Length: 188
Image (tube, rainbow, N blue to C red; front, side, top):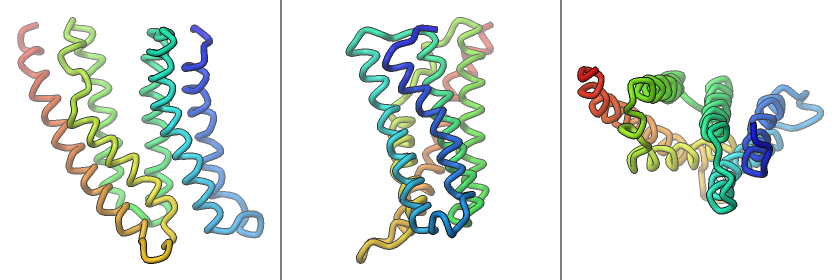
């Protein structure tokens, strides 16, 4: 396991998950609900920024590695799954939306692993549709975490709309990836 700055940032995202989840379990006398929302939003947003930054640094510093390529998506999926579960628990997200998004991530990860084993790893690389889905999701989650209105802006309202867009894109991209992989699987 190469120990470099991009991999350290990825590990930082994983280490932040217990703090991110734990903030909602602190006594209300220690941290009020609005402050819990704010701290969780800041942690999640910082994790999203380090996700972009670690990839950029790995390419820029020529520090890409097989371990980093493995760990980066794992860290992303763990943070997103933790956030979705917290949002369901807080009543800010329907469980079916969380199940769609988490289920798709597990399915596509398994599909990518399988395609790599049969020699077609590049055939289901990340698509533009997947990137748009990720952006929708990464904007929606902080809005839903913060939730408290800011002036005339209602983060809960807009976050809900964006997470539904992300869920639809999640299903569409999953079907697209499956459609790409089925013909390759039958050739084996």
